[in-house]
Amino acid sequence: MKIFENYAILEGEAPALVIELGSNVGITTDANADNSIEVNLKGSKKTMEFYPWGEQNDFPDKILKLSYKNNVVASNLDFNARIGYGDVVMPVRKVVGEDGQIKHIPVTAVEYPEIFSFLEDNNYSLIQQELAHDLTVLQNGFVEFIFNKPKTRILQIRFKEAAFSRLSVMNDDGQIEFHGYSAKWTEDTDRDDVVATPLLDYDNPLYDLKSRLGQVPGPDGKKKKDNTNSRYVLHIGQPSPGKFYYQKAYWWSIFESHWFDFACAVPEFKMNLMKNQMVLKYHVEIRKNYFSDLFKSEGITNPEKQAARKKEFYQDLEDFLSGKENAGKNFVSEVDYGSAGKATENHDFKIIPIESFIKGGEYIEDSEEASNAICYAMGVHPSLQGASPGKNKTINGTEARELFTIKQSLMKPVRDLLVQPLRIVKAINKWPVDIDFVIPNILLTTLDKNTGAEKQIGSPKF
Image (cartoon, rainbow, N blue to C red):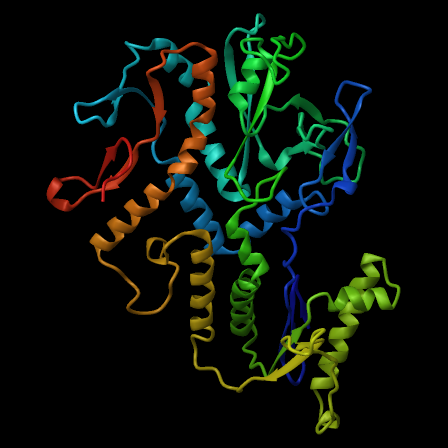
């Protein structure tokens, strides 16, 4: 018997694959405001309440762990982050052409040495990559602006890991005032390293920063300069409806829809099949929360005793499925038909016989279906990543080039977020008003142009 995180393989006389359905369902559920976390601030006797990210305040850790567990998910995340990055950010001058269209003209370091020095001094290409990955995986990103002493210019931009970031509980006016940074959010020990930094308004960060600097009147109509803080954090995130604290990525639906669990179970099963030369006779499905309900009914709260009880259950199941003395026995399982009797049947556990032969290539079609479902949710065409196994799944170069071009055009909202910090710096540091920042596309070309790729500033034309 081998017990894994969300499934088990019984190796008795009647081998069986047991899958606990929906083990990762619910991990994207938001926390309750009543479960706010009160922490001691670093270097201060003050305390502050922060809003948990996930029900147990460990959602970033869970997502990162699961992302590396499946090769399709990991590859798609890397692909989306890379294509979101595009090319290194480019300073340009916005001009209106004779046709009335806005055009971007690249500028040089000779023309604007201050701008290029700022990009180089802050290693913005790395910040751009870091933000691209955080926005792809966690849908949230954070950077910190550091001012000079007179608070007239922004000297530095620092990237802040989203996994270590939390937002303070809203004040009575519905404003989130602080960003909390700590490496101990998921630890049970006292969090004594939390650094709280004023957080700029998510909807209007530039206006908020100008009002804090006393450049424009605040919401109360008065100009007032904040002489206490010289650092501010900008929250960057792709909007998701109904979210006030942490934005939610649409691709996380793979956990709620069971496709992720299924995609991970197939290679593990095939590995054990090859390793043990085992012919499975049964596939057993166990209802989500069955074990948690079992532990609750038996009053088992200790994690070690829960693991032992789970192992005992699997052993009982293995004994039931094996041995001649069990032949002809009846099996009874409760079934829930829903409140109106119209819902789909929900079994506590369901035993499904498997035809006992091995041809080779088992679960290829199932693996392909799971990979395609995951790619669909993550907005990656399988042919661009090679996620679809089997024959006759290739496309020609023209189709691949068009798919790549379409994908880049869809990344425009992400790229706007990647240059948002620089546009704020431009406004505060009084750089020329016609200066803007763009991320060039990398466009694949045909072989008759004697190159494999070229850069294009702006959106591709179809």
